[in-house]
Each structure stands twice: as C-alpha cells, then as structure tokens.
Image 1: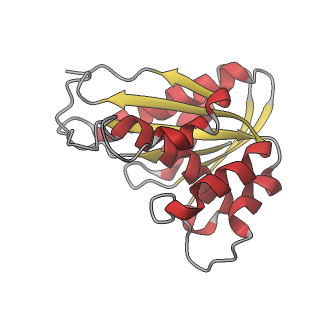
Image 2: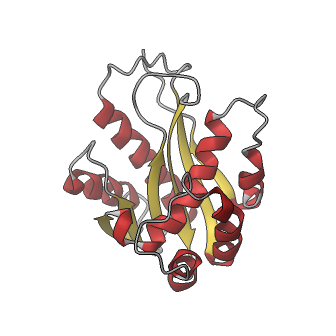
Length: 198
C-alpha cells in the first residue's frame, strides 16, 4: 500500500477546494515501481511536473493495482477556513483511509508506505495507520518514506494527483482532469466523505 496527499489543509481557494489522502493497494510492488524507475531519472518524477507521462505511468502501473482508495475533505462543506488543527485533519483522514482499506482486506498482511509530511511526526503517522489496520485484523508493517527516494510513492503520486485534479479543478475548465481518473475508475473507492467541521 502506498499513501500520499494532494491539495493542502489551508483555506479554500480556487483550485484548492479539497484536501485528499489517497493510496494504491498494490499486488506487485516491482511492477508498480517500474512504471517510474524505468525512466532512470536522478530527480523525483511528479504528476504535476510531468503531464506528458501521466497516462503512460498510470497504464504501466495499473496491472499491479488492486484498488485506488481516497478520502476527500471538502473545505466548503466542512466550513473550513484553514485556521483549524491541520495536523488533526490530516490524521483523521489518514485513519479513515486506512480503515477503508482494511475493510477491503480483513485478515491480510499489508506493507504500508506513507509519504513523509511535515504536518505530523513520522511516528504519529505510523501509529495512526497501524491502529486503523489493527481494528480489522490486518497485520501491517507501516513506514514513512520520502517520495524523492521511493519509486512506489512516485508512481502512486500519479494516481493521487489525478484524484486531486478531478476534485479540485472546476468542471468548466478547458482542461479535463477526469480523463486521468477514468483510467482507473473501475478500481476507485471513496473511503470517507470528509470531516465536517465548523
């Protein structure tokens, strides 16, 4: 399992209406990582910086992906002005995402890799995910890595980025972000509709 976020927990602005945590359940880690590692770049390959690779990376990784899970916090519906506890929001979504995944794989053994985020300590992130998995009898090894050194997280970024654009870009835009999500729509699972906060 690879997990990352898109958007930010700050105030709502145009193009930044949702804060999203998402991740891919991967059945073949080497194939999933190869979707990025084959480019042999010395710098991190990111969804937003490489629009020409988006479709290719997703299609190359897709045979190794069993499901794509996400939790989206709608800032408008949640009454979020960006002044609340951003760490708690992040951890709430992370826990809900992990629970949603665990419900799909009860009794499994999972290796979860979460992208480092300075919003919270790595140990707190690891404990949050492990606790959620444990509630559903999922044996989990949880680590926090920096995506710059992890091909799996870089591949995952193309799925997470697609979901972020789908939710954050106005539907009236000439750019059609839904196209990327359509590539894996049959595996897309929403785990959580958002934390409704005043």
